[in-house]
Image (cartoon, rainbow, N blue to C red; front, side, top):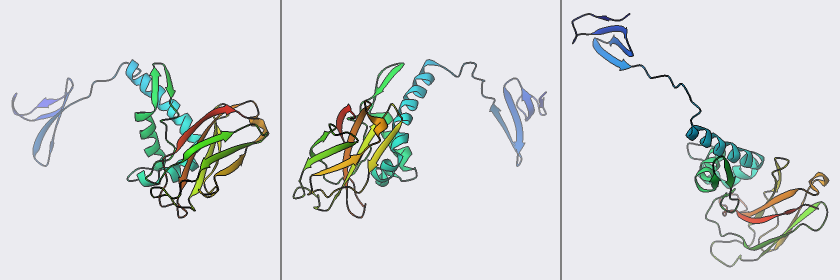
Length: 213
C-alpha cells in the first residue's frame, strides 16, 4: 500500500492504484504503471509478424549474398538487418493474411555500380543454370573486370546457390551448378555486379523464375 506523507499534494511512497511514487535524490516522483495487454495478438500485430516471417524466410538462405550486397548500408546495423528493412518496406505486398514478396523489388544487393544489361537465363541443361548478359563496361561507372554475382534461390527447399566472384562483365556469360535434387523445383534467379575489390556493387536484378532440370 502506498503512503502520502505530506497530504494530497505531498510525496507518495509506494503504490496507489496504478500510480507508483518514490523519492530520488530528494525529488519526489510519480509514474503510471503500464496497463497490461490482455490480447497481444491484435490483427495489426499478427499481420506484422506474418510480413516479418515471409521476409525472414526469403532472406535467410541468401545471407552470404546479402553480406556483400548490403555492405554499404551496414551502418549501426548488420547487412541482414538493412536488407530486412528494405524488403519489408518496399517488396512485401498482398492482402492479409496472404502476404507475398515481389521478387523484382526485393533487392538482394544495393549500390551505385552500373547494373546488369539484358540479363537472361537458361535452365534447359540438367544440373546447371546459365546466365547471359550484354557487356556494358563502357557505360557509366562500370569496369571491364567487374565480377558477376549470381544467385539461384529455391524457396521450396529454403536454400540458395550463389557465386560472388563470377565471370568478368566483359565475358557476358557464366554458369552455376545446382544439385540434382533441384530437378523439377521452381527456382528464382538474380544477378548483380561487384567491383574486384568489393568496394561497390550494383543493384541486383530479378531475372525471373523457371523449373530446374
